[in-house]
Length: 429
Image (cartoon, rainbow, N blue to C red; front, side, top):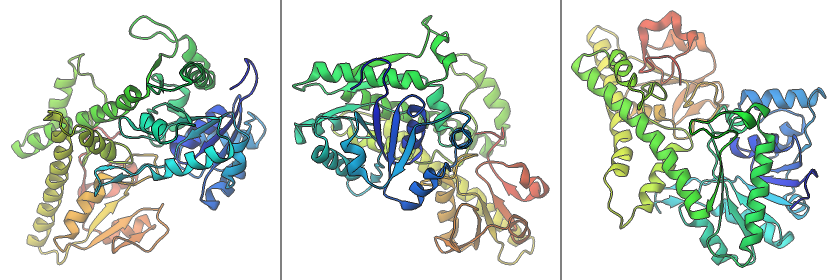
C-alpha cells in the first residue's frame, strides 16, 4: 500500500513479456525490482538491455541508460529480499498448459506465493499469470493468510509495453470471500491507479465508443476476471480460426480469398481487423488459453469452444497437405529429394518467441512424411531444432531450399517469391 503521490515498492516475479513490460511501465513512477531465475536475463536487464524482443521496451531501456527518461528499475536473482521489501508483488510466472492433466501448470506461481508468504506475509500479491477460472479463490483457501488479487493482461508479443502504455482496459479482480475484502478492494483500486498512471498521458483523455473518457477500469470478483482473460483470448482464436477456414474453403474452390475477406469485412459489425490468414493461431497464449477454457467447460454444455481447438488442428493439417502437394509437384518435375525451408519459427513479426507457433505443427507434419527440412531461425543458438538443421545464413538458406514455407511474409524473401508458400495475404500480422 502507499499514500497518494508517494512511490510504491513493487517486486515483479518473472521477466517474460508480461513481467518485463509491467516492470518498465511501473518503474516510471515507482521503485521496481524484477526477479528471475535465469542469470543471463538478470545480467542483461542490469545493463539496460532487454532479454526479450520488444521495440518499446528496448527503446525505454536505452533511453534510461542514457539518462534521458529515468526508470527506477533493478533486476535480481534474490527473490527473498525483493519480496520482503515490497508493497506489491506482481506475479508473472509462466503457466504452461499440461496436456496430460488438461490444466495449466501453476507450480511456478505457487513457488513464488510460498516464498512471499515466508518473507512478507502481509503484502498484496497481484497475479498476472494466466490461470484457470477459480484459481485465485482456490489460492485463498490453500493459503488463507495470503492477500491475493488477479489482474488479467491483454498484451501482444513484441508489443507488450506499447499495449500497457495504451491499454484497452484495466481489470482487477478481488476474491469472492476474504476476511480482508475491504482492504483488498482498496488495494485493487490502488494497483489499477498505478497502471493508469503509467499509461501514455493521451490515454487519460481519450474518448471511448460508449461515450466515456479515459481508460476503462473494471473491478469484479477474481473468478470473473479470470474468465474475462480466457474468453477474450478464445474469441481472438475464434476469429483467427474463422478467417483461416474461409481461406481453406477459397483455396480448395479456387476463389480469391482476399476479395472474399474484403467483402465480408466491410460489414461494420465484423470490421477489417485481425483477419489475415495464417497457418493457425499459435504463440504462447492462444493455444493454451483455449484448451484451458475448454477444460473449464467440463460438465457444461458447449460446442463452439471445442470446435475452435479442433479447427486449429484441421488448419495445420490442411497447410501441411498443401506443402506436401507442392513437394510432390517438384518431384514430378524432376527435383530429387526436395528440401523444404522453414522461414522463421516465430509466430509474429517482431517477436522472438516461437513457443507453440503454428508453423512448428506444419513442420512436424511435413517431416513425418520423410521430407528434408531446413530451418532459418536467427534466434536459435543451436545447430538443430527437432532434428532439423538450423541456419542463420539467409542467403545459404534460400539457395538450398526448393520450397520455402513462411507463416508471415518478409521483404527479404522477395527475390525468391516464386518458391514461397504462405497464406499471409495482406502481409501483416
